Length: 278
Image (tube, rainbow, N blue to C red; front, side, top):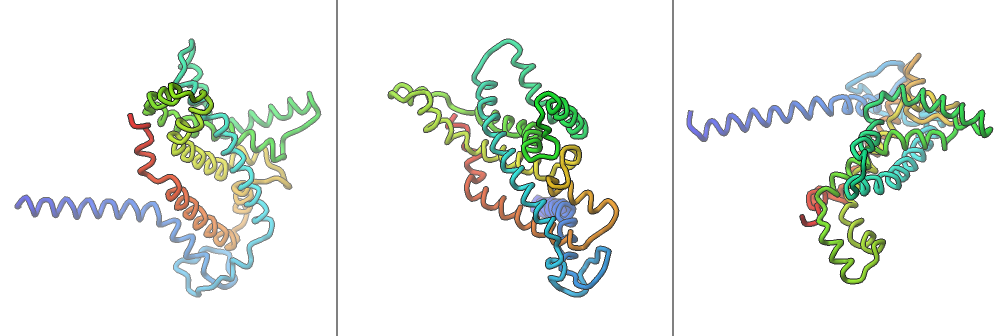
């Protein structure tokens, strides 16, 4: 076989492999989206759709939209708090030298190692303990869910910002300081724009972790404050409502739109260049 022929075969095998991987990843989403457009009264998933219709989109229960809005509020709040905590933590881990630094770094990664069920039980016990002490029970409240989800999500911000800071060229800050800028101004005008791709990436992961969390939300949620993922879990536990496919399709397209906007705002090229020129 000639060199040209062997390259062609390798190219075809590689293309087939990549196509198979993409089909494996996106096939469940295609089934959900396709089945959501199947009309008629039914209690099962029908794919491919036999009768294209928006019937089930009109049957989405209002409490699902309420749970969806609640999850968006909790996810955005958790992402913002994770950034407020994660950026200083990443700066401290990268820029500082102190005894026990490795232990502190391991503690920041702890939420990634602990099962979410254990985290949910721990926060449940903590909230009841604090409630008995101060009289405010955070179980079933939005602040309680936001705090727990921030605990879950903050390692993603710390990890992404740390990765950018390790490649950051500190001479840029030194040049700003030598020109008379204060440390806060140098951080705001030089450091923050360079690490912003890492902040955006960490915030996106933090939001997705919060939005898709089920175990912690099951322990800390309540009838009036139940996040979307936990709501879907309860609805699917005993019965199947095709309207769930419709709202899942809306979330799929909304997520794709969010990723597209973040790509336009940050861009992969910015992530590659985020080492600060070093």
